[in-house]
Length: 99
Image (tube, rainbow, N blue to C red; front, side, top):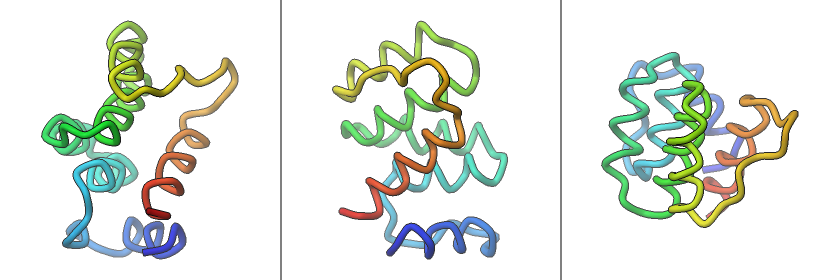
């Protein structure tokens, strides 16, 4: 799946496409305004990718301390000041769909 295909899936489907990782499923739910669904998917995905999305979600929530914990678990730096949530979402999604 390409990034463009993933974005179309976000815009078009009432259900997340099958076969996605928990981390991508979390991004799908987040983009559709379902923070709880996104958090559930991220929390269930015990991989570093799941932790990365989990970190992003807590950053979005405004819980910087919890986000920092999950960025560390993911082995990822906390985004630099000024990096928007939309830019971070896109960067994560681009990397995950490219694998």
